[in-house]
Length: 369
Length: 247
Image 1 (cartoon, chains in turn cyan, red):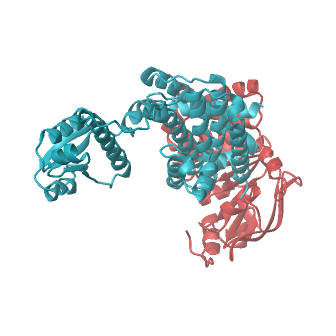
Image 2: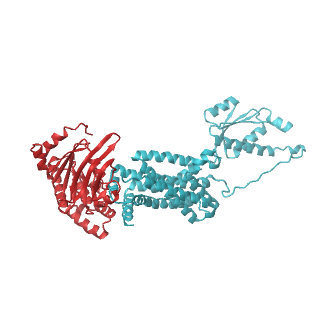
Image 3: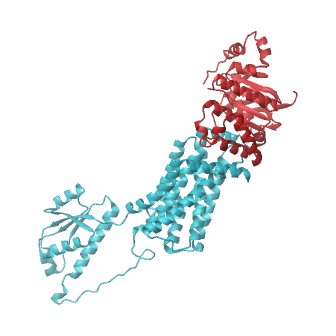
């Protein structure tokens, strides 16, 4: 279609002429993809520990040494009383308090058992739970080493558990988060750029000049969609390369599957942005509306938390956003090597989203009001 | 001049209980320069937007270039040019690119665009600015360019909404020379203005007051009818009857 050709020519010229926007479109994802995954690290390290040692024995200091040597804890204080230790927690200097009671060594050797007190600052629930668990692991390990057997008792039967992490052997957070951040950045770039575009023409008054021409609605929307789609695919490719170069993450599955998904996902997302653009009157409105939805996308798409553990209503909302499906697929294909057949249903979802959102945008764009 | 290119019968546009355009009736003939006058808020722009297919009327009939304003807006759009109050070429495209773009979307063949745009740029004296962004042009040049773009595809009718607002007197004269040239080439010109000297240049003039057409005739006849020496006086006599406050 010739008219579409002229529209595309115009849009591309405008995109490549705006150096700030262009820099934002390419530099932002690049830099953020390098920085964000490092910052968004859920591995819990450097837990600040305050110890109240009432025993001052060989056993108690051996326990403290062992905890120290685990690498996860930092001994910030040796407090004289529990009350003093809690003040460390109150002033945020300590996360966990370990209280070793008087008679720790004696009871352990003589009676073979001795309770310990662990108090955890649970304001950051994740850190508290994981930190407490680490401490338990270290202590039970220590427990096993105590030479109870030396006294001639037979060792109790123990259930020993071994586990292996599939698809992400070292359970490293970056394998989980990098593909998701890639999706997130693509979402932000695509969503905001398209949401602000038509509305910018409304502000400039040029939309009126367009509306008075015989340009068809689908031509106008396609003229907006295609250039951003091309830019989006370039950004995505750039992101994949950065994930490989910086984090050593290269898709286990087929690149073709990934690109097929990225292509249809972008169409859906751009349609969403254009839809916002047709409903709003100025860039500020468009920005706020887009931001509102982006927040929901980010928090409910399974980027940070598992969708499966959300309440039922939240899972329904999550499934109604295209982002959720794309993040899921990207993780499956990049980390597990799932084939297209494994994620066919998700593809159908995305095609649906793309159709509905773009159809709606075309419908809602009015040349005559 | 019996060939009617615009025809309105009791055309009305209502926003809530506000009649922006109230039962206006008139015809415009082919090749005519038709002036559309009225105070701010009298309903000129609203009427023009209906005729351009940008806005649905509430009631009444109107045809533009033979097409109905309710159902055939897209056919109307193929046959008209429009220059809005607000400068609406792309500021971040060059002079040449704007001409090519608008020529292209109206379906002018590429070879014709090329040739005609070279001619146009040299006529406007913009040869040195052809590859510069429109944003940098002075207002008067922008307006002349916008008009040239509006008639680039040789429409039957061109609608001009206050085309000379804020433009210096010399450029205004040049602008009207361009309008005369377009009319001589058979393009019907429908123009709104606040400058009464410009009203004198029109073949026929309509004066709108509070959404209604209060006067419609040649400038000469209007002056006679209102016993006035200039269009300024005619306008003043009519406009002070307005009960609506200007915006």
